[in-house]
Amino acid sequence: IQTMEGISSALNIMEQDIRSTDEIIQSSNENKLILYVKPDTVSYEIKDAKIRRTKNSFARYLTEEVAGINLKFSYINEKLVQISLKANCTDYYNVRVCLRN
Image (tube, rainbow, N blue to C red; front, side, top):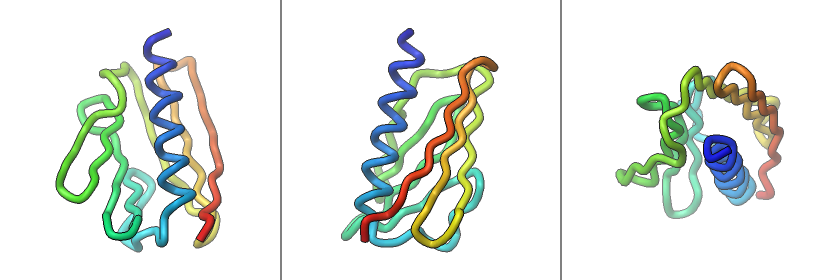
């Protein structure tokens, strides 16, 4: 249950950042999302089996270590991001988030 709560919380934080971003940085790829949220740069990726959020040069983990975690980003268009997250080989999350700006 703690893992699911951590993942849900991490997804909520990602959604908030995406909605409030000014721009998706071009060097974003399927493994790393990089956002420009004035005046900061925020990124998300998997590191050491955890979801890591970096704001400027300060990194923090949003989840505990999760076995089999897989996080992928798809860029539907310049304003729409799909987050696909698999955890523990049983929990799957697909979320589409639109930029407000």
